[in-house]
Amino acid sequence: MKILLVIIGLAFSTCVLSQNKITGRWKPVFFSMGKMMTADIKADTVFLSDTVDVIVKDDKDPAASKELLQMMAGAVLRKMKNMEQEFSSSGVYTEVNKKSNTSKTGTYTFDAATNLLTTVLDGVTAKYTVSFKKDHLVLTAEVGSNPDKRGEMIIEYEKM
Image (cartoon, rainbow, N blue to C red; front, side, top):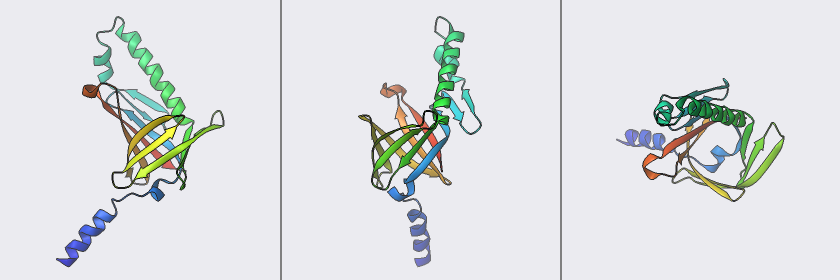
C-alpha cells in the first residue's frame, strides 16, 4: 500500500508546474486556431481546414473569402516565424521581433495552482493555460467574442 501511495505521489508531483519551468526564451514551433487553421512554423507551412469552406460558403464570393483567409494565415505564420518570447524569473515578459530587431516588454504572473499564465503587454492582458508536451511549452487560450462559438488557440514553443 505504501508503495502505491509513493507511486501516485510521484505521478502527481511531475504534473506540477512552476514559474521556473517557464522561465527562459522560447520560439514558436506550432500554432493552431480552433478548427480553422494550423501552422507548422519549423516547416514553414500553414493549412486551412475544411471548416473554412463551411464558414465562407454563404459569402458573396466564397473563393475570394477563402483566399483572403489564406493570406491572413500566411501573415500569421510570417509573424510567428520572427517572434520569440522571454519570461524572466522576476516576472518580466518580453516579446522579440527578430526581423525588425525590436522588442516590447511587459509583465507576467503564473499561478501554479491553476497553471494560468497572465501576460500584460502594451496595456493588453492575455490569459493562457500552461502545459508541456515533452520539453515544449504549450500555451492555450480561448478565442472569440461569441460565447457559443469560442475556439482554442494553441501555441507550442521550443526553448532556445
